[in-house]
Image (tube, rainbow, N blue to C red):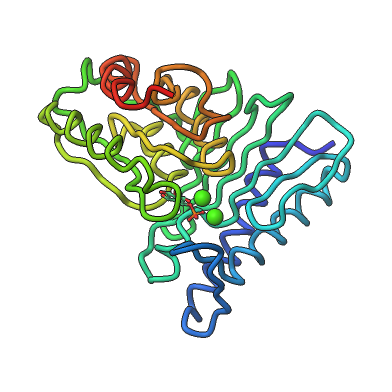
Amino acid sequence: MHNILEVAKQAARIGGEVIQEGAGRRDSLDIEQKSLHDYVSEVDRNSEHAIKSHILSAFPTHKIVGEEYGEHAGLENIKWVIDPLDGTTNFLRGIPHYAVSIAVLRDGVPEYAVVFDPVKDEMFCASHGGGALLNDVPIGVSDLASSRGGLFATGVPFSGDNLTNIDRFTSTMVAILEQHTSGIRRLGSAALDLAYVAAGRYDGYWEANLKLWDIAAGVLLVTEAGGVVSDLRGNQDHLISGDVLAAGAGVHPDMARLTSRFYKG
Ligand code: IPD
Ligand code: CA
Ligand code: CA
């Protein structure tokens, strides 16, 4: 009998090897534009293919959904959710900050999570009720008591529909800046942003319009590390809407008060 979390970690390492092999020949990769300023390369596809093959060799009946190949039908209420390369723009430009994200959901609820950064060899993982780990060492969210002075991360809208409501983003940014932060980062991988909240590296993170594969693993990492995750109104609809706010328990209420002023529905 295979252990789901172990298979997820092995699959993430396999995806990471595909990515790092591609990083060594960036100039010769096949790259396509999926939509305006949204690119996919053969590395994204090869990583997902390799991850999926590994999962199916252990669990042939499980459902899988991945960013690049969509749904793989399965018999059970267990679904693997894969982002084979989160941070493609970074990867394609030689910015060494990207990850593989794999979550396993039972009846829609994240039960296992892995976010693997193949550049820094950092394996973040969590299981429901079992805590969160970074390279096998337990991690916890920041214990900051309020949002004042915190270090935050976000995602800056950059194309398509995300730009329709740009003022909501800029207003939120100003409101957070008024908390006299230690800074706001935009590093370009939602999965790693959430993993860094789980590890206490950031005090909080917010971003709108993400996909399930961007956040499914990261949200379990944060809650298992003792943090709070919601959508930008403070409700529990983040896995459906893709709008996410993650922070330590002291910081989350302050951030939710600010983001909910601008994200009303
Ligand atoms: C992207 C990254 C980025 C976020 C984008 C995502 P991708 O994922 O997570 O940080 O701001 O919205 O689409 O396309 O590199 O897998
Ligand atoms: Ca992604
Ligand atoms: Ca991706």
